[in-house]
Amino acid sequence: MPVLDVQNVEGKQISTIELADDIFNVPVKSSVLHEVVKMQLARRRAGTAAVKHRSDVRGSGRKLFRQKGTGRARRGDIKSPLLRGGGVVFGPDGRKYALKVTKKVRRLALKMALSSKLNANELMVLDRFDLDQIKTKAFVSALDTLKLDNVLIVTDNQNEQLELSSRNVPDVKVLRSEGLNVYDILKYQTLVLLEPAVKNIEGRLRA
Image (tube, rainbow, N blue to C red; front, side):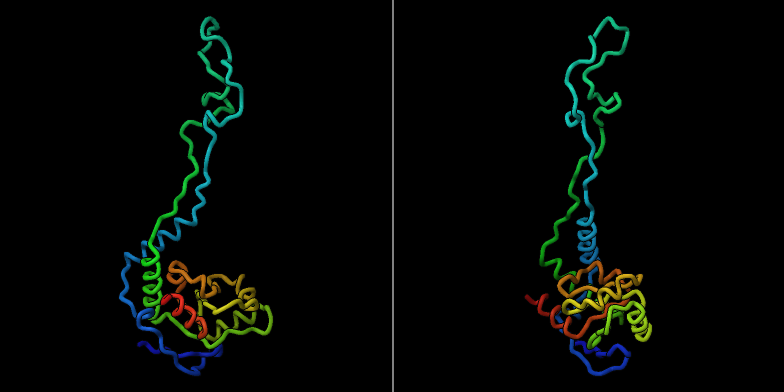
């Protein structure tokens, strides 16, 4: 069972914590991580690009002029794709890009992502990350003390001071434990877990 130091916001070790073997010490398979990340990114695509085809354009279905005798090219109705304002022939239609991945694979990928951070020494546990007020300068100062850059901070519940103080800092994201996902874990270089959030994550992945 891996043991990790628990630090405070000043970077001093205050205790240790035992991490569950079946969650933080799982063999990592890049193919499983790739599948789940691809699913997450695919679900973000709106898929709303669409055009109006001939049958969707509003207008009369009457033939513009007779077929013969005018000297002009034969024409159908005003909704023809050849005319301005007519329907589009080969334009896109709305579609869904979502991919299906089973719940079992998604849960396994989350365990693998956490394990990969632990194996790479990119996982840190803090006892708490409390700010007296909503102030970006105080948040950045705390990150400098901890020597953190490009970091994902996972909290156990809502922390308004922390969330609002960090929202304008580039390469930093604060996430609650219920929203933890594979893409964000892999995207940021360092994963910081608040000590109460560790228990939440273990409970979620064992349920």
